[in-house]
Length: 163
Image (tube, rainbow, N blue to C red; front, side, top):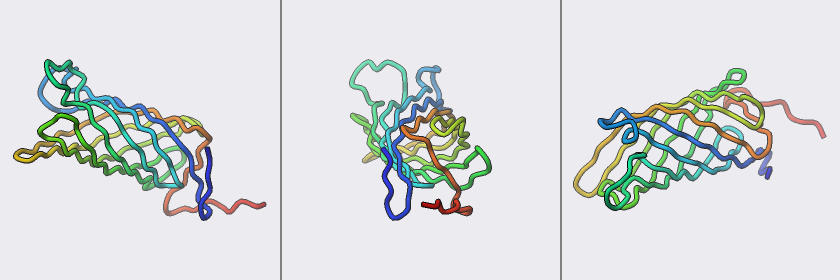
């Protein structure tokens, strides 16, 4: 679905993003996975991300499932490559450290107008009533646009289309 507001191009996307943290533990304990559904307007996008902070099996209540609001800005574009910045805020279910915030930077590659790949790194911050922690991570994502994308940077505006 494409919508135009005040000359801005808008489109819907879905993204799958596995990543690894630098925390102690097994590979499954370090593993993260998420799926994001969102909307992009020119260089800004806003998505809702659901995922797990660890892929290891839990012996009790699952304290790894989360939901997050993820605004993203495409800062700079050169050819098929784009530098991205994301600052997110979310909630970790059943966890004592239930508030999650995120700062992430990435390099996105436009494979074609509908499929993009991103290599990203960043940091999650978790906080609760009496404790807090943080962890860094590295990952890769694949994004699918339901309609062909039209990306451009903040500094170079596209030429106006003729009617």
